[in-house]
Length: 332
Ligand code: 3PG
Image 1 (cartoon, rainbow, N blue to C red):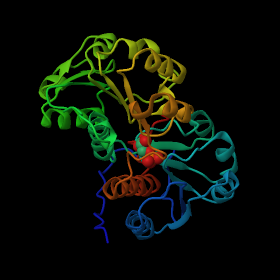
Image 2: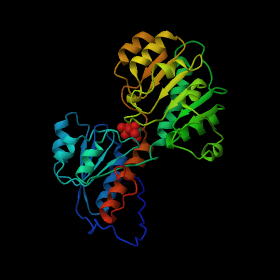
Image 3: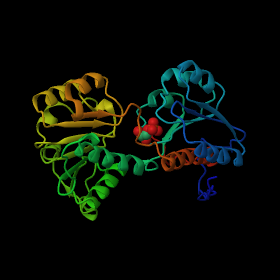
Image 4: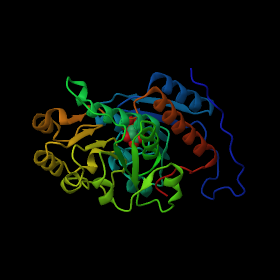
C-alpha cells in the first residue's frame, strides 16, 4: 500500500477571480487503455476519496465508444496516451480538468479543451527516470546485437548525443556519463549554458553538429507541428559510421520513408524505437537486427513511474478542485 503524503497548500493572497468555490463530490475518471499498476490505482483512489470525490475507472478499453460513454458524467479525467479528441471533449459535458499522467500531451486536443474552458495539465518529470533507463537499455541492446550470438561493442568511450535537454534528456546524459560515455546535447530552448556545464555535458551549437558527432543519438523532442517528420534521411546520413538512433520520444517525429532510405543506403546505421513505426514490418524484414521497436510503449511502464505519475495526476486534480491551482496547466 503506497504512503500518501498529504498536500500542503500555499496561502494565496488573492483568490482567482474565476474560481469562487471549493468543488466537492466530483467524479474523477481514470481512463487508461494501458492501465496503471493496481498499487498506483489504489493510491489514486485514496487521494480522490480522502478529498471527498468519487473515482470512476475505465481500463483496457478497446472501443472509443466506451471512452465517450465514460466521460459523459465526469468532472475530471486522468489519462496516459489515451486520445482526448474534440469528440471526447464534446461528449464530456461536465469536464473541468484533464491531467495527462506523463510528459507528452500531443494526445489531447488543446484547442477543443480551451474552447470549453477545460484545464489541461501534464505531470512533468514523474516518469522521466523510467524513460531514461529504457533509453540506455536500448543502447546496450543494440550494441550487443540484440543479444544474439556474435561480437558486439561497448558504450564506454562512445559519444552520446542528446536531442532536447529536458527532464528525460538530462537523466539520459547523467546515466550515459556513469557508463563512461562522452555526452553532448542540443536544445534550442535552453539559452543558459550553465545548465549543460553544471552537468558536465558539452553543449553543441547546432542540430547538424549534434547528429554529425553522435555514436548514439537519443531523441527527446516532443511531437509538435514543427517536429513531426523532422528526423529523416538527411539527419541519419550525417551520423558517424555505426551510429544508432534511439527513439523514446514519439514515433511521429520520424520521417519513416527517409529513415528507410538512409538505412538502405548505409548498412552500418541502426534504429531502435519505443513504439513501432507504421512501416515496422517492412523495416524488420529489410534490416533485421539493425532495427527494433517495442510493440507497445514501454518507457513509463515501471511500478515507480506508474505510481509517481498516477499519484501526481490525482493530487493535481484534487488541488485544482480545491484551490484552483493551475501550476502544471499546458493550455494557458
Ligand atoms: C509520456 O509522454 O509521459 C510517455 O510517453 C509515457 O506514455 P504512457 O503513459 O502512455 O506510457
